[in-house]
Length: 482
Image 1 (tube, rainbow, N blue to C red):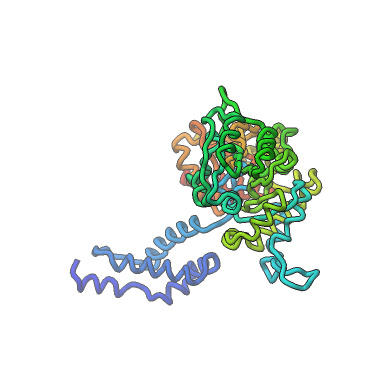
Image 2 (cartoon, rainbow, N blue to C red):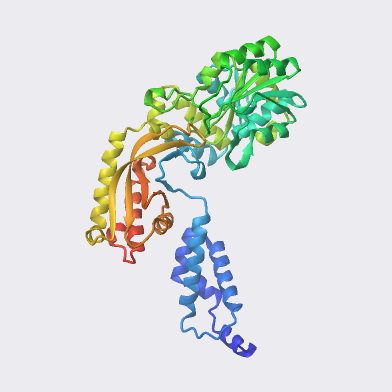
């Protein structure tokens, strides 16, 4: 293509002001903002200008907006947004782990929209400490003497070891050298803290005498890590917590325990695992317990330390606290969540993670049948023609978040399949809905576990599935699905 011909072709491109004032662009202004619209249209025009062909274009406007539409679809999928979790994994790390209770959401909005007393003591009229917002509640709920909050549980372990074990030997069982999400390993955290790792025992068996020998050699801290994200079964052995507490007292060293999952209530009556509670560890004599705020506790992302005041006070003065501290919104969400625990029945009813985990299979079956009937009505022609099927199947939900990996919770799901399309195509269509739906695949069906679908999302859930199925079949979407 000659340079002159290319220049003549590009002269026919519409001006930017014409594009920005177009009705299609106005719709994007509301959704993405003028700056993003300008950036996408500029990039689209730049791409067309770099093309080296002599294609005759009758309508540049239509061509430009078609390409921009694809760019905005990609932009929408990349932004942080709400999704519908139909995977059946309650604490899904990739989907934000624990959803917040309404009380926690309201508390976040309250402190975020204006100023707050995050570090101001209203009683004394002077500077306060941000951990004051939750420390008393944590102590009341766990029986701890003191408490502290940082930005995640790895930070909690890092802070504790940095203060209590820097340049000292920390004894830990080889069977507890776990790796958590994102290839983040306990030995790496220990190394960053300045502590020296002193492994004892073997992968499957560690004896009390192994710890005693390490303490005789001068180990200054004992670290016990709850293996919440895996299980070793068979020929295994490890000391009881009571035995480790006795050793810590005999040798006058602190015993730290990383409980990870952060359960404040016993879930065994609901048939959900045998996860130890924070209070049980502290009552057994552990000096400092560390755990997550966004797993079984059901709050915002945080790392929480509870235990002896003599150790927690030292950590509060550690220079790392400035780097690891949480913001006002996390504190507000955490306090509101903890307040619900003052009445356990209220906690199970109001904290989403607990409510989802303890929902009865019978109730889920009723919901699944209702969803199936609604979908069959919206997709009756496709189902009648035999191009697709929608049925209710029993399934298994899991806790997630590296918690109780062997626990299976009975649930029910919608199983959807197409005669002419694979599961991957439907999963992609579900992800591209206005409110994206994240499901899973089993054999040749897409499985939507209703346990993790909130009742207030039901309409968007049903409409999204129907819209995805019709789109996959190449059919227009009826008005009642829009």
